[in-house]
Image (cartoon, chains in turn orange, brown):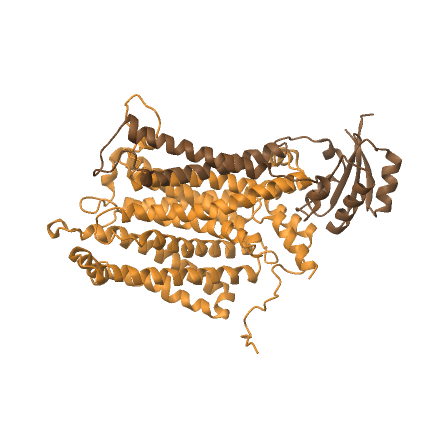
Length: 455
Length: 177
């Protein structure tokens, strides 16, 4: 006999509300894109986002005039917030691909309604990640020297370096994500085109839909390519974030020089990416009143993914301690003790609580069903992951191998402006997608509707 | 009067359109196509029977080409054009070239798949005669359309209409384009 908790969702709980039909689904989702006036919450959110985007522009302007000395970075801590936030942003983006590609391969029914939010999140976060190292370059105008192209200087990039691998990974990742997104959204753009009333919108979405007709031949081609793309994107995203880990693992700095960091970084991507998607899903389903399409089933499933992410991260944290304690490198042990008891200790311990201890509440079904708690836990995870990246990057450099070389890192107001500004860039791009692109994958949810109907 | 492109029938379920397509094929029709709001399992095998291995093969070929291209660029750079001794590693340090090779291979594969998908589906093509059907917008929403085109060798308007009626079509329409 199996025991079920009274608050647990039954195994055959509907993925979408029973009153959703093919027609109502298309009309509801498309009407959010086609409405003439955006709702008030959209304008409020968009205004705040654009204001933050202005902070980024001002910050970048002053950075390009004054140089990266306006930030708190110096010797010994030459990699400051820009690099740790690069890792943070690319982790959030990677989580979007994991939800969208990996769970397409597993045919998880909850993926069909949430994958578009995940992909939009990824397309909004990836530019923020890409901007961070470019701002950090010191001579940002010369970043194109990283391309291996034949030039009159006769020099080539050093392709044995993890930093170069990282550049190639990020570039390929962004381009591939755009094509993956577009291949998936093509049928939905055709739906919007056919529902549009005004001539301008018909032409606008008509061009975007490329003339999609939904013929059996087109569907077959789209499905074959989309499945192969998903099978490529899932290992791709693991490689991208592992290479970010290699940026650090390849260095001799104590605290960085460890083979565990590629998976460690990837585990962080799983949990933080899912956390952002949960927060955005809760807000979008409330803002666009899509409660019958984005149901408790979806939030419950994603909360479980987040819980798995926190367990994987806990495993990585064990090895974070095991490495320096087991090894014979005095510098690594000194750095580790300083990390957990020294100046950064409050940040270190609160990060562990936010990303591993508090998420254990998700074992309780009532927590997974409570949107406010879920939102708060997710927000805590994102803050915790930011702290994790911050401590990991700066604390190691603060306590390098030579004691005479030690120092402390303090972010300046311009460091915080870069953080606030990239959040502004992320939200601005996200709000624009929210307004102009269908937020739920209608083609895939239609199949769920038919499955639910035939149950 | 513009030329007759074909006759469109509207069905309300995926099963109905699948049965209808199978029956039409048995009756000898060859040039017809369905337009559905989501991919109906098995429908493409009825309308376009035979193996379809083009797209996976294009992607596989692109993967090999992409990998070879990426490796060659790195080899040219590190071993031939600008040899640099890094810690005594060989100039052709292939393990270190694998990351660039892998990522670029995947990029080329996905790009090839994306553009081959559009080419095989004959997109972008912003206008198609079937868009003239009044019922067409429903095909991207909640209805399942079959269009028998006038170029079919056994096409005859009244016979096609009768066949559609027997198959239980909701609505039948001649498309002029």
